[in-house]
Length: 329
Image (cartoon, rainbow, N blue to C red):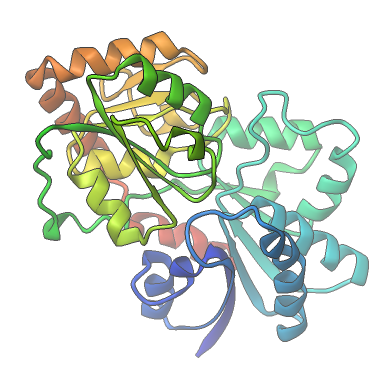
């Protein structure tokens, strides 16, 4: 049985029940799992330390020629690559879901040589051609080190969910990376008659405790997160990035046939046409307010957007992308 060393962010991504782990088992791999934090996304000191300790432990546990899969933690991709370069280690490393930086300018010039050195030792999976071209050119890395691998809507247990919106209906926003929580707070305050629900892992909304039309959940399980999406009326994803972010939560909304409002970013056109969801410009608070108001008053539009998004995203299955991962080993 072939072994793969698999490192991701939260533990739920590296255990039975998560699509990528299950697919590795199905394809005959023995999986040695590592993770950086327990739930959601964490920026605390332990996670910053674990980016190095887990990477070192993984490389020390593996041997020359072993297969290593890194998933969804770009900083670890770079750290592993740098350790391999400095200590002349030979591993078959595949990094899936490289996001780079949230800025449209990409990495600062002084960082690029260091990042180039690390990533040159890794096969890098990105979710759209524009991102691939941008970072290959900016970092001066041969395009053969990159490959395209679309995100998917796995682990959204549609068949087990009641997706009827609660009464009164609410607007849901969740996640952590690149979320514009300041814009979200402004929208909540501008629409006191509308109910909002947020799920996150940090303290960005701690100053909203007295806001009567907002309910906040922290560090909840994937199942509970799915429940909140399933029972909402609208999914809102206000982002602070023009590169990539938020699409997995958008997929959840689409799988539950919810209308999605999302900040336009480089990756989103890979998955949605302009008539599948509502796209707004970064920082455009009024566009979010208008879109929410319009959707709350137009059930036909909600249903239409929900169904179009569902048709588009249900095609993104784990089986259709796993063969691309496997070909990199």
